[in-house]
Amino acid sequence: MKVLVVDDMRTMRRVMMQMLRSLGHSNLDEAENGVEALKKLRSQDYDLLITDLHMPNLDGRQLLEKVRHDEKLANLPVLMVSCEDDKKQIKDLIAAQVTDFIVKPFNINVLRKHLDWIKEETQIV
Image (tube, rainbow, N blue to C red):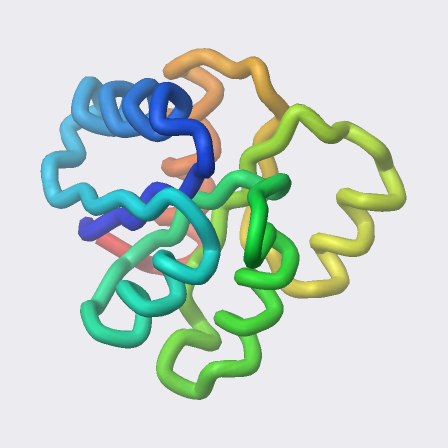
């Protein structure tokens, strides 16, 4: 499974990528914002997008909307990560067709459960 991790904080990208490696995922890529992520998504094939919600330039919500409106990317599973736990915000993301959502902070076991659920729901390998 090829995963793109997007977060404007390098430390958070590194932590997420280390957790993914610990779970056996080695085909990983990263982007520091939504603009960079969108370029990568349009030029390479990914099986999963993990993105932070709050980022400069193009935030996670805007990135999600662009992904869902792009014919090539529309079915890409998107896992949104944020310290935001506002119910309205989460409902808005669900309406925008986010695949799943994790509230920071979280641990590797939480990430594993969400990834397992996404794999089961979307049939990705």
